[in-house]
Image (cartoon, rainbow over all chains, first blue to last red; front, side, top):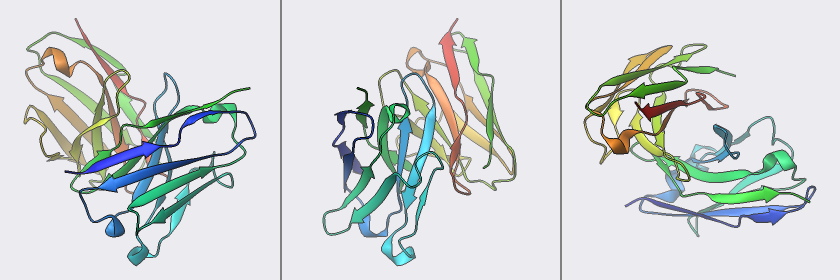
Length: 117
Length: 107
């Protein structure tokens, strides 16, 4: 069974940093392209970024609103993908989901990030 | 960026009805289209991928069709647990983009 478990969310002040983790199981993580998606309170879904597998080149792409502030990385030895978030803004407040395509899209339960003074 | 436009934005239906939600892409995306169901306070649940492939464990009352720019999600024989918000997503090119959602409510 595929499982994605996000952690690391919390309350942070504007300008602060936070690192989210997503622990994966139930599939071959090293072959997977891992994606982060967020959802602001009462809003729709927004793609944040994606990291390809190492064998596919490990390329990382980011959405324009987070480019230069967020960094995605992966540790295949730990079956974990990370989202380092720096220079956080109030508009980054959202539930952050980790997703991947196995046979169809699989989603974690999400972790809430609140950016507020 | 590819824009995904869902219609309608909201829909009222009765238990037992069938409904269809449409999603239009601003440019061709082949069949790289997924549909998700989301209930308040919960993570999205995958229903359909590759436009028409049913996610494992999802009942066959959900069906998807389309290719290129126009796609549909059909839900037959609505049950109380089907009333939720539905999103489409294109994953043909980056950034991946989502429709704005369709809220399905009980009439």
